[in-house]
Length: 351
Figure 1 (cartoon, rainbow, N blue to C red):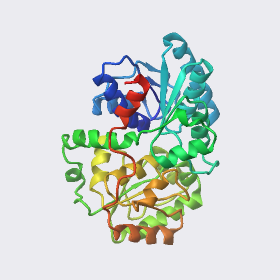
Figure 2 (figure 1 turned 45 degrees about the vertical axis):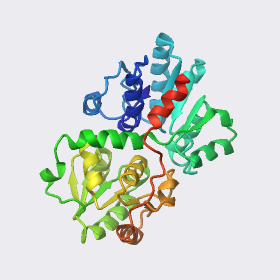
Figure 3 (figure 1 turned 135 degrees about the vertical axis):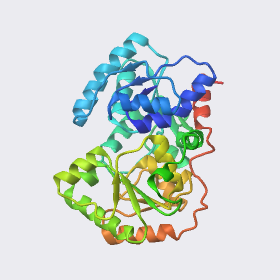
């Protein structure tokens, strides 16, 4: 199991729990791509998971630097351990570097959340997920639409398995843990369904001064009628200062741990985000979502009415928020029954 970012740890957690339950021999390799190792150790503690056996401390850098360090570091450990299968999840540099390392060593690769496509190759994540899919032996597609994407690209059907998305398992399993930790809303003095939750961190949004400013303008229009809470990503805070941008009426707070964030997300009236994982989580929890991007690799959320694309124009963001807040939120979850982790382990073990 190779992870490099917090979302990967969260989405792998149901598979790890299933491996533990079946007493199957495995280990976790952490590339250390994002955040500090200490923060990620806390996440493993929060989710009640075994610590990684290895961490290669890649850190942040250019896409080439990250991928190169991952290729070298992962290869050395795979040569030492010689596992039967390497599992990767998602679309980061860790996924690409680890999948290529394993494939070149003739170790089978399983890609969890395979087949997602935004059809926008300006996004590094799109390139990562395509390349990872095409060197994988087991492609665990979360939906039928993702399966069709893979088969349409010439990947043999026998390599593709529709399992549902492990985010459903993760939300169901981890929300219970989160609720046992107390109520984060009491500390923040918000009432359920009386606030909006913002996440905004993607390079194409926060590294572009005009686009970032435009999105903040749209969010401020919404905040007149609905208080907005923005746990600001370090990258976004840095760029906001660099561009001398003001948050206006939006309440900026330090990032929360995953369990606290999950609580906030579940109780929000509206989520406004550029995160793929948050689009999925809000959909699973029946919280309306506005996506602050021009495209999404999670079109299923839009198809069921859980999400709307708003881009970066203030008027469109404001109108999209009003549409979603007035929409019936009893949509059907398109990401499966919460047993994706179990299905993936069954496929890998043939049982």
